[in-house]
Image 1 (cartoon, one colour):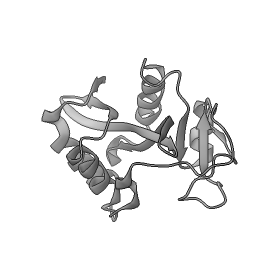
Image 2 (cartoon, rainbow, N blue to C red):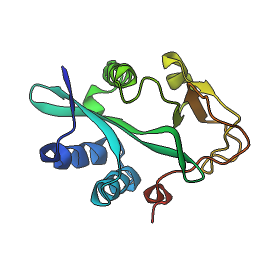
Image 3 (spheres, rainbow, N blue to C red):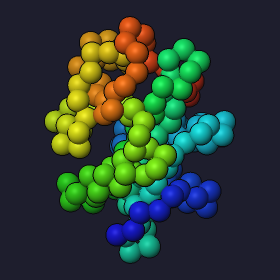
Length: 159
């Protein structure tokens, strides 16, 4: 298993992976397609096993108003036949150690029991516009001001 930065040549493979990893949802596939199309700043890695892309992780900017205040982890995707084998955890641990990630606040909207294993904690502040009670909104290194609603790139609105 190898982890590499995503290259333009592998974007189609990531699109195929997202379709398989999130059956019944086109949101993640459309999100990453649109973020690439608009050339948003992303930090992305893929996991390769036997010359096939089996995992993908992406981080985009998080905002307090117009100021970047950290990163959003979304999505983390693993091919169904490789899920529950530690691939996602390995990819996440790798990404969190990278220079462009390791000192920043990172936010994720996801399953608390899963992300808490990697040091994420539920946070009541900042507020997540996609999770009104912040019941599934977690952060690691949450060192930003409180009392605001965290912003996402426009492509997250699904439009």
